[in-house]
Length: 174
Image (cartoon, rainbow, N blue to C red; front, side):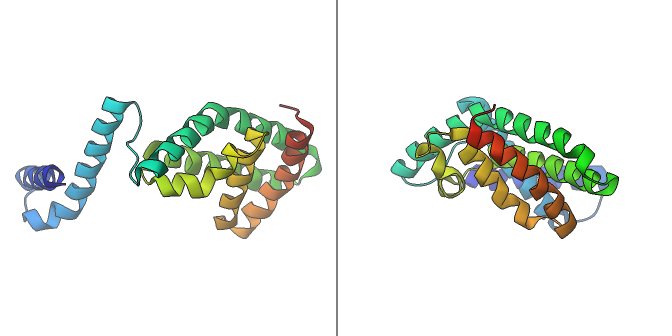
């Protein structure tokens, strides 16, 4: 933590030299950049973001993360296949909303995988992958919860696609 604060002050001072102004005007953004640097360094050293939590949480979350990373691309392949299959049954506008939602979901999942360091957050979101026989469906169900945060039109369009995708997961068609 001390090193991050030092680095943040260094970055803020560099901003003053480059653009003028006062150090405190740059500090908030410099702190964000220093944290990002620290995460990147931790990622480079360990191969992924270091998780924080109790020893037991970290172990469980690392197991979960491994399963999610190995299977997330397959889950999105099924979702995209389902999107293509539903294209003819949707209006052009609704299809556009569905595409937008799937892309937004990919970005959210990628951001979570690359940046989430809280072991408890991994456990809360994906704990079903350690209990389910159908791991991809468990990941899919966790992603479904993210759709609730979308614009209502996007959420409705994505949910139509998810019905088809869920059937594929249930039948084992992936």
